[in-house]
Length: 400
Ligand SMILES: *Cc1c(COP(=O)(O)O)cnc(C)c1O
Image 1: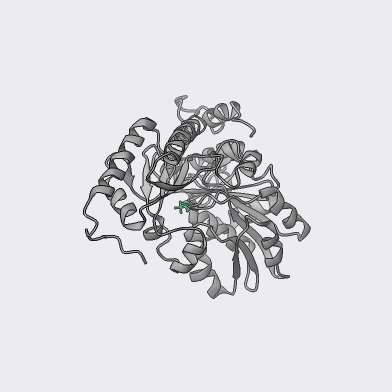
Image 2 (image 1 turned 90 degrees about the horizontal axis):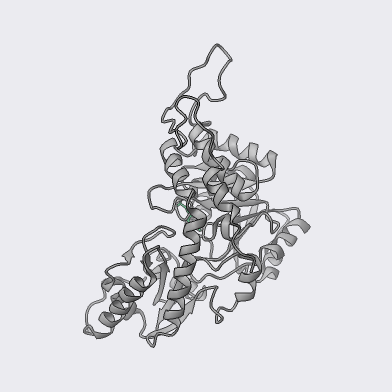
């Protein structure tokens, strides 16, 4: 496994920075404004209206682009706004896309509920086997959209292998890199054309904002994405960009701690008698550990696991945590615990869900920056409470 690049921290702290011309404040200013005054007709300082561009959003785009190794990224109001804008920029009626079967639920819903009605179709396949990708490509396929690690079982897709297929067919490859960020995985260096992030997660890292970004080396594609963004109005807001600019400065430092904590907790879970199975790319038991070592710089901060006792006990354990928070999302300072079958993946047909390896008792942990031993103590007391409570007690979460 290649390791962390210490210079990422320097870039994260200084990459978006230029001293403001009025007061030399060390933090880049928040330009909380809708419009900009023109010096004369047709003469401006490069900004006219914040749906098109804004200096604070530009600063965030500069730092994300530097971390991605590309020209400035394009930032959006949410991760889904980024994904929607990308797909509307490259797909038209009659076109087809191939996606990972474990892609983010919102991305799946975008195709099923919105793009399908516009005549844009998609195939969702197990991209962990690249031959499935090749087999799903049709003459109408314009983009491959993969997510690795996939949610919630952290199933990996070999980015280089899929990139070779994309090149051979002259199709774009986009990677949703939200779980690792360019600090821990560089999809563009591995041959992808487009890197997509929900900045809501690790990039902001403080659960303070929602946002998204797209980075690519393709200048024409960037221009097209900016045109569609300003047209449909999915641009990031200045205040969210400013908060995200503060969060991203500690991204490399935070990720090291997230990974360190997750490794300790994953090992503890694997040795716990109540635990049936742990999914974490840093464990020797992880079936794709070699691929993780090839394309990731570290295993990441997300763990999934199953308790031996099954779904009722899993739900009781979730209801018994005190330090961990029962909440969707991931990548923040607070450890979040979720039950994907009843939350993020509740919309999926139960058979399909189980086919994806998401058992009814699966629990996902986004490891925060608390002391790992405190998280372990919380899980230990929650497992004990779940095991000892009356087995006939009603389960409040309905598993659909
Ligand atoms: C959260 C998430 C998204 C969507 O981002 P929002 O900011 O919530 O719109 C997309 N992809 C992945 C992998 C995510 O975790």
